[in-house]
Image 1 (cartoon, one colour):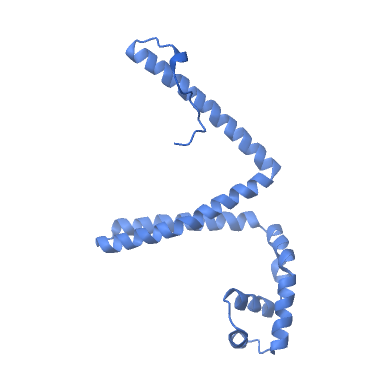
Image 2 (tube, rainbow, N blue to C red):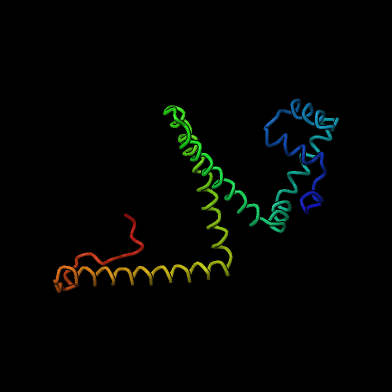
Length: 178
């Protein structure tokens, strides 16, 4: 039994489903009846009010029981799905179907981007992760500088010119966006 299941009854979980599906009162009561909960409108609204009052508490419980695992699992599922979709595109002979499949892949990209962006926000809130990122960024900058020095050395050695680096009009900036 998870922490989440202790917060909500099965009926309250079903009420959440009606909220997510944006059902009217009549549709909600019919759906709940199908799910085995034959309740009055008053009980429905009481459950709905209770669920609304538990929003923040539910978020804390979700965070406590493995937000990171869920988050990573969803990213992995999207990436696996993209790989499978591209495999299907490569196997498809009909150009129209290929284009349709590629369109579907492109339509899913914003979802994965949102996961990556939210991952970044979560990490920025965690001091130990921020230290890891700072170290990683510093190592990346060192590698970029070494690469640039090697490139300058190779360029100088390959054409025999000893150019004056002060003549370079624009300095190399590894963070520059092109």
